[in-house]
Length: 635
Image (tube, rainbow, N blue to C red; front, side, top):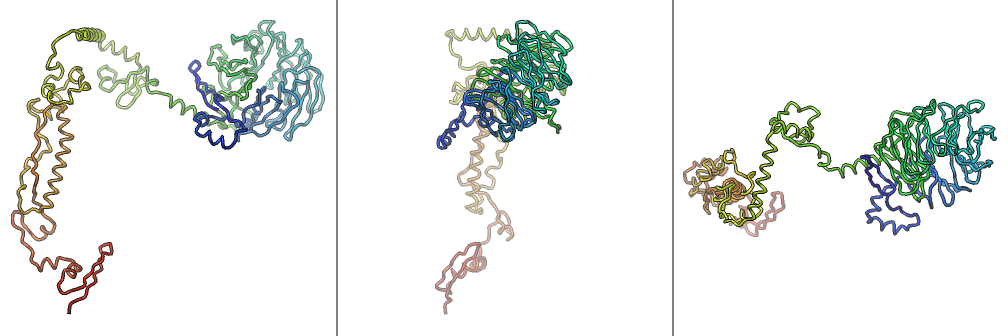
């Protein structure tokens, strides 16, 4: 899968089922060739093999949050996915398409399926366990764990009851509706809510002898009830969805709805869920999922699906520091079964973080937002001001307050505040700006007239006169230097005075120039090799000076400073360690060594090699300063 980001009402929605899937029949050779496919490499697989041959019908998450169950066609099949391994745990083929199913345990060990052939199929961990038939075609199903009873609504006014502890049918619940479409069990109140075709919701107390405890007429009598959901945080709140695309939020103690929301699509409402904790309600039909505020009905965001949706499941997550399997919060991950091969999945970070088994979604979305986020988008409504500008505006006292956001060498402040302060501190700024724009337009019109060319520009006139012979400044890239007043050289600046203390007429000498450049250069007693090295070093210093100081001086004033003349053979008197140790005084001639003194200063192997008393002398250098000498002394 690939991930596509959609912005709906300022809320980021990530569609996780965009892109191509990898077919199972693909050969290993073709799989390796897909490594170069960019779309394949960027795919996101939320769960492995999360698709069906034709379409998916129902989808639920187990009570412990470790398993996802989904049914689909064709053929009728149920798949169980282990989210801890993000892969398929098992799949089972069924005899009929599934209308609804319920999980009888916290894990996958006990499941009951309601088929479209009027059958109830009970499955255990090992597989199929038992099957029984109901009198009418079923439409919905609910489970009461306290009394271990399964309630089945059908195309009749009766609600069938199957007691799993006794293993038999109980007396059905007789409703006044011609048929019952949906069921919702409220465990906190021990009530069973039944929504019928006649736009009524009947609530039954099932603690002892079932009896009808209330009847609720919903909106228009012509609209049938298609969805029911109670709020687990507030058990007295019940949301009712109708066949004409309306959702009403009721308090069970009142017959008047608190909020009514219309989807405006005309399709029946098939999905309702509450954000926990939070004040948002998620309602959906086969086209869209709408998220809105339960108190005001104001829309929060809208999720549009690629295909018609049959059922939507809001995945729960275990909150931090929670060690039970009862209390769960809602996450931002939604799974939807629909009329397409893949099971649709959406991630909305604004609804909540991803569950623990899909925590990588948080990292991916954060990296994606950081990649797509630009600095101008972050601060498009802010103005960057320096400390000097703050002092000029009189806003120095705002430093350290939320009004200013520190950034680099200045601060960001709200653009509206900046304009207000600017208007107060400079009331004539607009007039000055207006006059400058008028002058620019007049100058643009005058530029079209034929007029004699001026030899010197108005900006940096003295600099232009000095630089007429410089071909670099004739380039169009340097035209703004003599046209834009912002490039005017400030002759009162410290930098300009350092280079030109007397103005453009006389540039200052290089502070690194040696005043005594010829001193000691004619010393006849200095060594020739040392004088050559000094000459090379001085030449390198001169080249570096010409590369750095001269262009900078030309930029400021336009006059090349005088450079010192270096002779080709510059000799500088130096004293080696041997001369210093011998006590040679500068200015006097160095005494020549005698032949005996020279022989004594030579190493032993050289004296043997150059000696006249030896013959057949051969030397071999062994490395590390070792020399092997072989010779035959003369008789």
